[in-house]
Image (cartoon, rainbow, N blue to C red; front, side, top):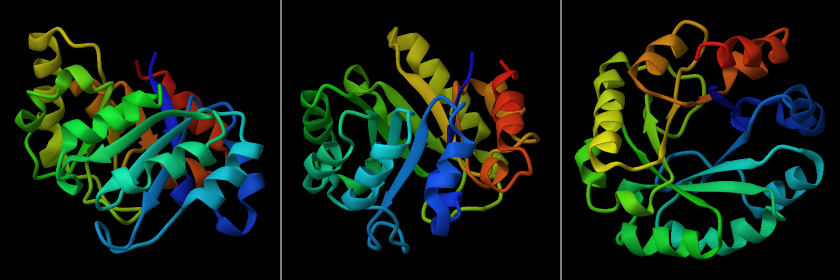
Length: 217
């Protein structure tokens, strides 16, 4: 069955407690950490993650859109108070991706690598044994509510083929413009974890959207 990860970035920040309650039937809470350098915006840091961890029952899927993420990983992990399931870093943001993945694995949580739309899957070939989740960006990172980039669909298939050929066990996650129309496309290509922000948090019935997406498998 598909796993659904509502993106907290699309929630109403004025009432985060109530917003998180709307998505408690999801599989993960997707938390975007932005530093204003790797991407233009600044979003959540350890204080907000710590507050969310006290409220939400969901495991956290942390997506770090920051330069040199190894600097912040220990603080993010501590703020999660045991709620963090996976920490995903960007290939493009790391000088030493292998070393940074080891930092995450040493915390005994899952490690993910995100790729921007223009970054090929082949970059992951030699670090695949350390990766639990490949996050394919179907928008350029940094802003919520962007339109889905259909030209990235073949990359999801490339990721599925790489995993199969390497006999790896990592999941494929897709983030960007995911809704009832685009989700079937990425699922057909091989995605198993769907990040959706606006489509869930801005819907009249977020729980129904979560269930509709989950039933696509």
